[in-house]
Length: 247
Image 1 (cartoon, rainbow, N blue to C red):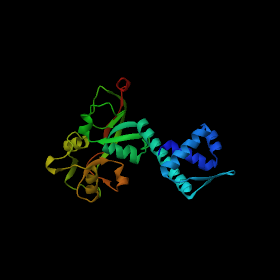
Image 2: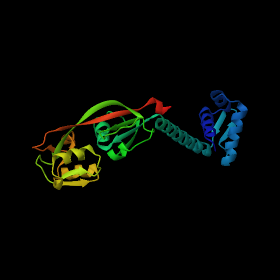
Image 3: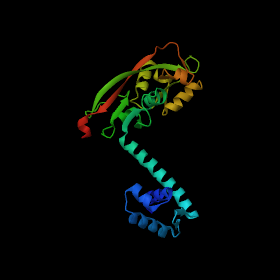
Image 4: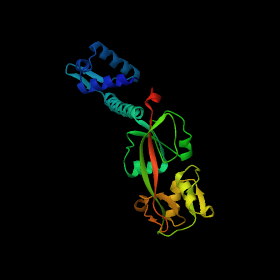
């Protein structure tokens, strides 16, 4: 059973006429008749009762129409989804920037981009041309990309109640700018590595540590800036794949 046969059948069913269906689809009447007969033979059942008044669907004909509608609609949705995936721009992005730019600020829409979230080290070592954009606070350099824009992510040491709760929690990714900045300001003896940003935020929310985090989390996660540390602006940059690499 082919998709085109179901499409033809749907037109016949709705027109209740082979002649009208042929005119609507731009096929010859004999072609439409042959396709219907092939479908009935394949299903081994009669789909219409023919009379001078036109075609009357059998019970099997009604069921086949419902099936055809579902298959054609599902196929159409799948095709549109596939086209969006092909047309969407691939974006390589740091995790916290994804949370900030996509989830919080809605700067980039999920329906318009294919996001690949990676850690700083993975982004720095990335050497492919499948991503049209790279958005990161990592120290990313690649001759394949050109710098399009520089922005700043406001950060601060956050805790549950504004007091410093040791340990200071840092990402285990050695190239993470949040980690580097934290280690430049506090004693390594007061630091614990955590692999997940979600885990770091949860621990801070529970009062089990303090961490350098994006400032917007004060409202989003009900956290407070700690006293004794100033807010810090970390740069993040947007890189665009050079047109020569696309060709």
